[in-house]
Image (cartoon, rainbow, N blue to C red; front, side, top):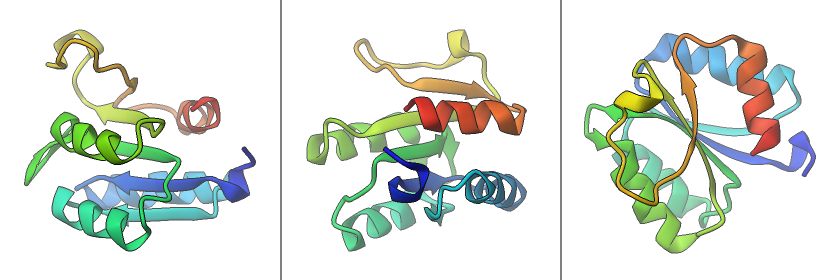
Length: 121
């Protein structure tokens, strides 16, 4: 899929991280990036866009919940949804249920690694 056609939902509660990630993705040609700082807002965005996202790029821990729970909810609607988790935790420290597999970017990460992860998704 070309970057211009890829629909990305960015879920991040830190405005500085959101700004950097969004700008990086747009510079790389990903024009269709929607952002939310909360799970509730991301849920509204998901339904407003009729779930037409290809990639969820999400912080692990958010003020109104934990990303893996929200991801399970979205995967019921769209099992093929690609997910990239961003976190300050190491991959070993993330508490994921068996069978939950996501691409993980440990913060801080180079912007080139972000772009590569989204392209590979």
